[in-house]
Image 1 (cartoon, helix red, strand yellow):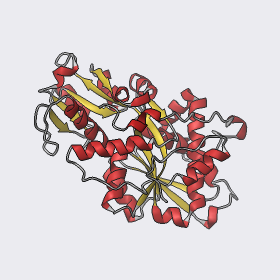
Image 2 (spheres, helix red, strand yellow; image 1 turned 90 degrees about the vertical axis):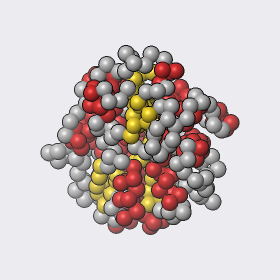
Image 3 (cartoon, one colour; image 1 turned 180 degrees about the vertical axis):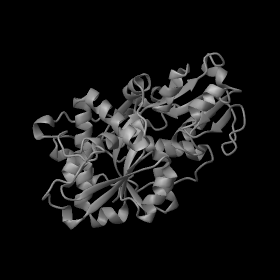
Image 4 (cartoon, rainbow, N blue to C red; image 1 turned 90 degrees about the horizontal axis):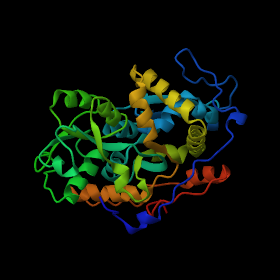
Length: 367
């Protein structure tokens, strides 16, 4: 996967803001018995809105949402407007919820965001911020696969047909000069679409020889004896590529811009808190995973997975366009018109107020 666009080489990291959040009272909040943040008594609602519905995956690549929920950082910014959370296991279901009005704002991967935007002809969502980069690896059975060349002829899992990792793996296969039918997954490599929940069991049973997957699934496979053969970050300039974005329903953005701004401010301050308190943040994310899914991650999975994910406010827009190009080349997407998919105005307003630098939309922003 060589640099798909020359402007990718000019991508600069957006340093996470080193805010003295502890002094501002961040991380100190009221919770109920389940650890959920409570609206402070007497807090004022933003624009009189009772609640904002936020969606995310119980996945470490959604660390900003996990930590922001657990530590009450979104609720603190929202005041008397209650943050209500919903969890999803797949991008398409979250897009459906956004379209149906079941959620207003969501954390989601680039491929479903692209698909949701193009299928609605640019009318349902906007990407309003970045959230995470990295955290995707090719993990293999070291007894069967000892080098990248050995991947040919093997059975490798991806999470879902056309999802972000599936597209990345198909593009990598093409770069090796191998042929695979994108729809069926058959060819020089057998691409086996497998839910992340059952991928570790499939690996243990021998029904797959490896997987191109996000964290923490990658580290779960390593804990089962797998070996990291390739870190996708190594295929991108500066080792940065978007894995999670923040999206909003366009009508909600238009009707409640101050609420959207509050959520973005919560995200920026959560990322700063994560950077300032990495161990506490890791524990908070794991605690929220347990609350959401009923099971926390063991240290041998949590620790390496956490290290490979970088939270960021920058949506890394040029890499999203590159990922769309990969999907087109794989035959999974018609040439999309992504102009207008970003509205980074609210985020850049927040960043400037926090002493940060604005982020770029790679020419794909609203006019």
